[in-house]
Structures are given as C-alpha cells and as structure tokens.
Image (tube, rainbow, N blue to C red; front, side, top):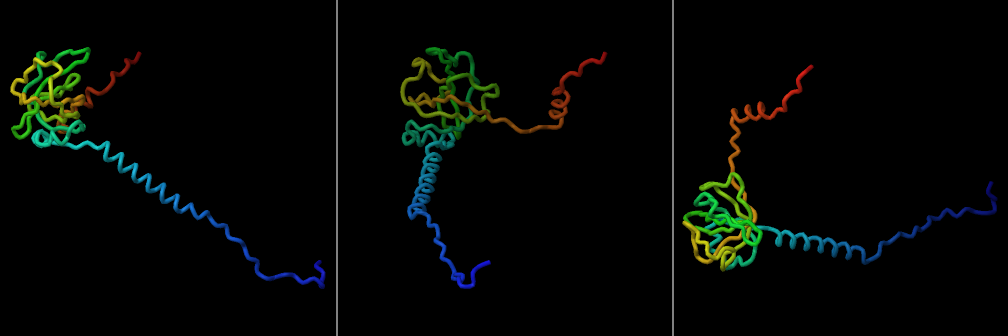
Length: 182
C-alpha cells in the first residue's frame, strides 16, 4: 500500500515520437524514379516494330541495324535450289511481297512446314545492304536491288478454323489404344 505522505505523479507523460530519418522519403522517391526509368528503357530497347514489306522498304535507311518484324507473302515456293549450306549454316533464299513491293529474304535455317507461296509470314530480322551469303545467287521474281532482309525466325499465318469434322477426327485419333483385357 502506498504511503499517504507520497503523492502520485499523475501528470501526462510526454512520449518521445520515433522520427524516421529525413533522408528516407527522398531515397524512396529516388528508388521509384530509378525503377520507372529502367522499365521505360527496357521497353523501348526491347520492343520490335511490325511493318508490312512496303513500309519497311520505305524506311530501311532510317531503320539501320535495328531488328524488327516484317510482314509479307512469299511469291514462290521454296525449292532445293534456293537452300544452301554456307560455312556450316543452312540459308534459304526467297522473296516476299506486300502491296506489290518485293523484299528479298535470306533465312538462316529451314522455313517451317506451313511456309508456302501466298501464305502470309512474319519475318523477324534486320536489313542488310551488300553481298548475299551466296554472292552469285539471283532472286527469281525478286527485287534484286542490293538490299536483303536477314531473318532467323519465320512465323506462318494459319487459320483457326476448327470445323466439327476436325474436332471429331482429333477426338477419335487423339486417343491412346486401350490395353487388351486378358
């Protein structure tokens, strides 16, 4: 029991507030600004423009060595006389067209199975001005203007027309054979 002679101090106590360092908000703003700058830089340097062949031909001087995606349709089927092995690499030579403008293309590798005359393709690569990997090659029905598009990736347009008979065929032929019961 407290002594009556001693009075209790009931005055409010002042709590010292914990202050965060004054530099912390400034550091937070700097970190966020840095993250935004890095994100914008990454998006700008890694984005690829998508150009139809006619527009790509118009802007090839400005494009320089920059990679982009080119849209066009092959003007001929690829034959064996258009594929060459040069320094251990396979190159396929063909031309694409868009709105009547031709672009000569050198693809490193074999075109995909669906690649065919008149079927739109998207080619990922860059412009090259100068000699071809096979300097004696002349593009049949091509531009042959000293410029060519170097690509290592070909995407072929295909339809998503999944008719009922295709679905039925896939359901039937997509099954594993059942083990015979003994």
